[in-house]
Image (cartoon, rainbow, N blue to C red; front, side, top):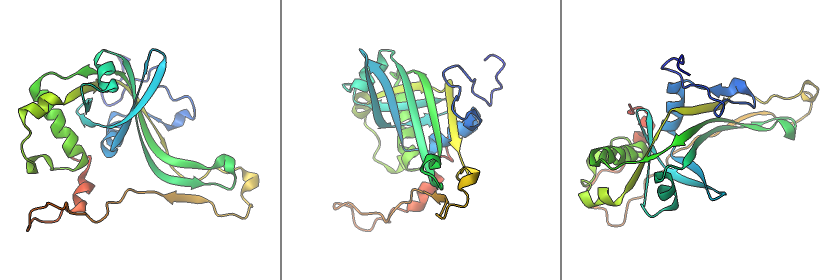
Length: 226
C-alpha cells in the first residue's frame, strides 16, 4: 500500500474485485468522476447484528465524502460513534440484452467506499460541506440562495468519510453471448439509459419576472469539484 502511486487508490483485501476482476478500477480520478455524477448513495452499517442500508444525498470535497442529516437519525448517531460504514454509488448506463437470459446484463459504473466517518464540528468545514451538497445537485446554486443562517448550520449534522479504501467496478460493451447462441433469432445489443431533466415546474409562490431555471446547468455537474 505504501508504494501505491498517488493517482491510484490502494487495492486492499476488502476492495479487491473478485468477480470479473478486469472490471475493477482503482484510478482515483475515475472513481471521483463516478461519485461526482451520482445523486444518491447508499450507506450500509450494522447495529447489534441488524444491517441497515440508507439511501441519502452526499457530496465530495477533495478526498472526502460528506453526508448530512438530523442529529437524531440512526445513521448519523451510529456513524458518529465510529461504526464501520460501506458507502456505494451506482450509475446505470444501459441495458445489455443478450440472446439468452443467462447473459443479460447492465452497463454500469459503481463505487464502493469503506471506512469510518467522523462528525464535523468546525463551523467553516460544515458550511463548506453544505455548500458542496447544494452545488453537487445544481452547479452554481449556492450563491443564488438566501444566506444560510447560523442556527441552520447548527441544526444540521454533517459527517466526513475519507476516500482512502475504495474501488470502482465498470461494465461497458455489448452482450457476451455464447457462440452457439449467435444464430438465435432475437434482437441483441445495448439499450442506453440516460437521466434527462424535464421542463421546470414553477413554484406557486414564485415572484413574477424571474428567469426560468435552465436545465442545461445540470450538464456542468461534476466539473467544478476539486
